[in-house]
Length: 190
Image (cartoon, rainbow, N blue to C red; front, side, top):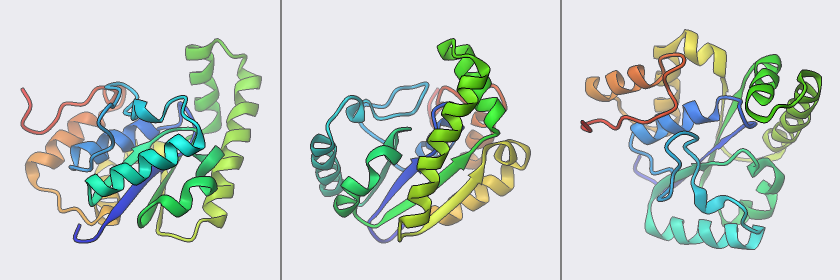
């Protein structure tokens, strides 16, 4: 990872972005200093104005050569902050829309049909960023990541220019076991 890079995980809430953010963290990419252990989101982004987020990005870019974040609402303001991002690398995660709607129903008591419409709307915003952003991009299917774990890890590592040793790959494989990936167990942690 010789040059400065900022990795941004984009998608929708309940859409598999936590899986990718957790994997980035286990691969050694700092995804924040105030990260929620379940959602893998940097809490410093929550409830902030666009100007505050711009300042946060500028600060973190001076502190680290390689870092990133996952915040499901980034698609709402990406082009208002894009000029502050050093060498952005966007990682787009897509999950089956019915699975996202079911997750909205479980976690937010949202009717299934309303959840599908909400997911559709949010994916539209995410795709708009993908269409217009002029930077390196990686597109991932959440379901395929779970089915073809080694291929997923190889694609993510290659995109990030990270070499995976056996110990890190083992920790990543344990982390992405379906139904088990919410909490991070860092390499070397007890």
